[in-house]
Image (cartoon, rainbow, N blue to C red):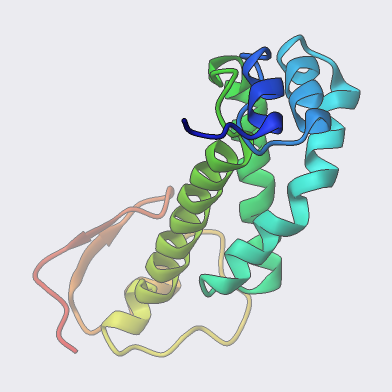
Length: 162
């Protein structure tokens, strides 16, 4: 006959609690699902350092990891009603945090890979204050811009060469 651990039997009577999750976390999640701001703040205090550490371990700077942590908890706040009681809250939060970090990594990669038009075409940046109309860019690029309007939209005659 198989031996059953006493703690597993005690937890079997509480379907709202995930195996291995603290009773405090389960109570905070239940309170946050009901709209209790203090309960949600308690969840943030418990898990914010872990979420920041995930971001730093995945290659974000500390400031970007803080931003990803904030984005993750905004999503948790928005979707806490969809969390299925009886499952591990940390696993759910971890998945949201990983996706928030991926979002920040792709955004920072995009930000680093894009360059202003004047840099892509090899022109020099203006050194003085820009005039009210975007004529400084049109005059600094080698004949590739046909016209520029007030909103900063440009009409190119061809492609820029590097």
